Amino acid sequence: MSGHSKWASIKHKKGALDAKRGKLFTKIIKEINVSARMGGGDIETNAGLRTVVLKAKAANMPKDNIDKAIKKGIGGMDGVDYVELQYEAYAPGGVGLLISALTDNKNRTAADVRSILNKGGGSLATTGAVSYQFARKGVIAYDGEDVDFEALFEAALEAGAEDVTNDDGAIEVLTDTADFEAVLTALQDAGFNQISAEITMVSDTNVTLDHEHTGKVLRLIDRLEDNDDVQNVASNLDIPADFEMEE
Image (cartoon, rainbow, N blue to C red; front, side):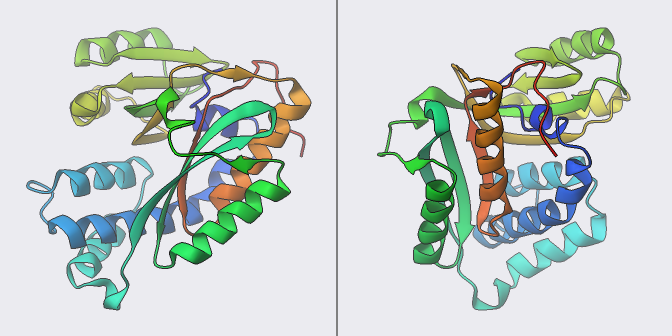
């Protein structure tokens, strides 16, 4: 399986998608707040906000929630000043992690991330040690039980996607960041309903581990993403097709 596949790993954990949805909404709202504050509330002129709104809609966030988040961002978010941070780290087995965060307290977030890594058998890496293995891409995920892969494959490539993968029913469409919005819109217009859609970091080469260490890495990623300040964790873990996450 593709190392960047968050949806692929979620499929191995029963009920995980629904359980994470509430926290996901909270984190997307924070992204909308920051994007609106920095570039204004008009999605036509604020490309960053437009991308986050697409992510929110793909996650089925209600329009009222999106509108309120934009208004809060324009209004200054009650004096809260968020900064973007990125940590590079290693998980067990030498798996590379890129940890993205939005925080109003850099010291707190740094301490939390370091603590979670240490407890999960990971460690912080020096700047540049991990990031060179990743590229920024658009990733649109689909459940193979709900879509026809061949039809999606053809429609995605026609719309300008770079690649389409199908790993054990976890389908992902990869795009250049410049083509993300056009490809997502074209596939939605063609009747394909995505699980998620976002611009994120995608690994060029992946690390394959045994099942025990794969489980350790996935549990570490889960604990990192459960932190309120951490927005996203990208990894170069290659999940075996026959891997099953222990409950």
